[in-house]
Structures are given as C-alpha cells and as structure tokens.
Length: 223
Image (tube, rainbow, N blue to C red; front, side, top):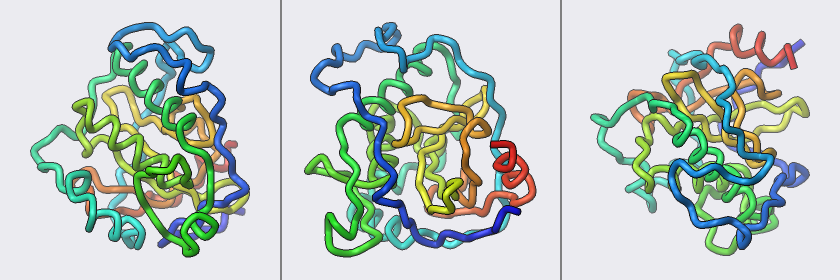
C-alpha cells in the first residue's frame, strides 16, 4: 500500500548519492545540436506523456521561499512565457547535457552537514549540495539558455525508500521528463520510481499544486 505523504519540506537523504562520473573537465565545449560521445546522451527521445496537472493547492517548501527572497530573477519570470517546450533532438541533447554536467559538478552533501541546519535551498558555490540544489542549478542553467521557467518545474517526490526528494521536471510537447541528481539519464516522468507529491504550477512558479494521488500512486506502484 502506498502511504500518502505531503512533504512540506525537503528531507533529501545524505544516503542518496549522485551518479556523477562524467568528469566536467572532459566535456567538450557545448554546441547546440552536437552529438555527445557518451553513453548517457541518447539521440532517440523516449516516449512520455503529460504529468497530472494538479489542482489542489499545496504548501510551498520553506526552503524555496527563502531561496526566492535572494534569487528573485529565478522566481519572477514573466507569466507571458511559454508553458510548454518544443522538444526536438537539439533540445533533447541540451537537456541531457545540462543534467549530466550539473550532476558531475556538484557532490552530494546534506544540508545539516553542510550548513548545520536543514532546508537550505541554494545554487551551490562550493561544489556541494543536496537534491534541491541540483534541481535549482539545472533550472537556472536552462533558463540562461533561453528556456522558460514555466516549463522547468520543480517537483517534490516520494522515493521507494519513503524519502522526500526534489527533481526538476521539463514540460514538453512530447510529454514531461525528469532531471534527477541520482541518474544521468533524463527519463519520462512515468519511468521513474517515484510517487509525485507536488510541483510548481504551470500558471505561476510561486504556487505549488498537489499531484492527483490516484494517478501518481498508480504510476508509482508499477515500479
């Protein structure tokens, strides 16, 4: 039985380690549309579908609130921007590249060990962070490349170990995909082993919505 939980704050476990392993120094300069010579970069886009939209309001993670107070440019993008990204091969390769680069550039360290307190959401400057820091960094990198933040939505999930975890979801015209610090593979949301709890609303990134429990739970139970 899936136990429903509302992770109002991230409890990203220090036992969850990054896949990493690509070596940032070995990456060739980024050129949009290039084919990346690593096994983690896929040329074929896997089939996905849209995540449940979510309707009921959900509590905003406290760490996200604090993050936005000092990073307004990442939280106040105009609502006129597009909600859905057109996904083609160059865009797919870009998303994978950012996921792998950030996973490699940051090393997992729990907030309590890092800062002496929990619930610190930030863009790491010292190469150390936990799950939400990876997700925020990926969101920022993709925004800097012109992607709309309305289509780059943070999500809180429940792992099979019943740990709270944060990932970045990308909303595309070919379905929704997940960028995760626990794997360099960008996956369709339904191919992950997670139960999705809540994520940022497509209407306003400063509003969070609960994911329909019946749909999310049925997907989760398949893995």
